[in-house]
Length: 157
Figure 1: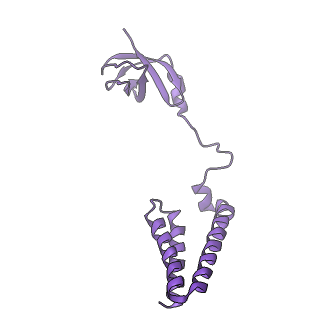
Figure 2 (figure 1 turned 135 degrees about the vertical axis):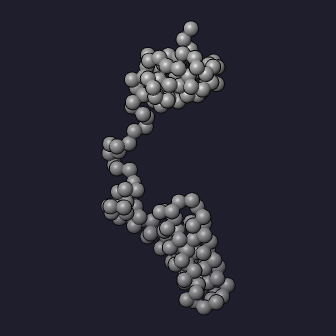
Figure 3 (figure 1 turned 120 degrees about the horizontal axis):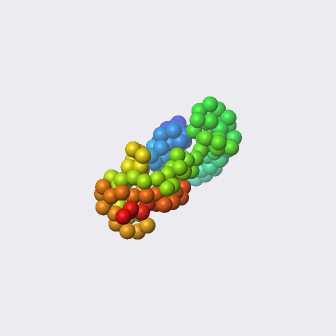
């Protein structure tokens, strides 16, 4: 195997590892890592230990430099700003704030709560949970607590 092919294997592997960032799933990244490893092994096998060790060190350095560039430069690009969460995270919410006003409201179970299910509260389908008891479908319920995204209900008698 000639040196050009070996270098092409390593570079193609790094290119696939780069594309793994934009096309997640693991297959492209695993294939890229395999190509880098195959290029290094071919360097040892066909060109000698000096070539293999040089490819190993250069691949490690290229990986570190690429990672450093990703951390430093990509967040400053328009694409990077769309991919990453802002530093202040003002648009990010950990829970649905519209659920906070449901406490004390009444509704009707849409499905059987075992203890989780869905209910219609003010005409809106909401994922709810009982306090542990099973509540049949089409039973009148009352919201007794809202804890983040968790809406706790109890059956009305």
